[in-house]
Image 1: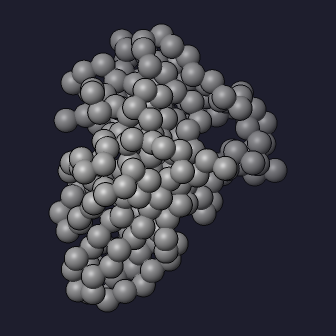
Image 2: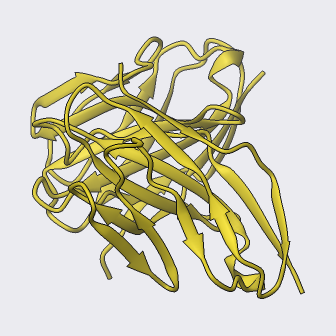
Image 3: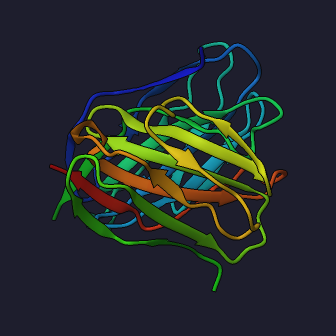
Length: 114
Length: 112
């Protein structure tokens, strides 16, 4: 079945450091890919998305490029802030129910220290 | 304000005592889903609904029921809760063409 694998956490960085969170996927079809972020005590929020190969999603300084050849969607940010501390989830959706069915990775806890 | 609301936010109950977690959205979305979040497992889909009276199982439906009698509401029912259903539960909704799901704030359930 479809699956998403994220790099193990937790990840701890200093402010202004470069961030990469790896995400790879396995899918039988042609998925759409997402990064969601969960701030402490809150629900998940969509951070960015990409719906076809070579698309780059971006938001709030975060970027991720849909790489079909490596089945990856790695999240990057050039300079993290303390306010970026959160749990980040990579996810995919596929098929005719793609508006309703997401498969998530395990999540990566990011802590940014001042 | 566009939002998904869940109630209660926190619930402690005992094994076998039926409970319902409510979910409501004000965005006129057709799709609604329930997920559970467990450490090291991410979020797993329990049930989803594509419209009123249309529901289907997700990845981990055992021990849960849902209903969709109105477009805005999608309650999650645990007929006989067990300790392995202790988890953080999220409701989500979406429109079918935008792919973005909007999540509620979560319900932390403890079954003793």
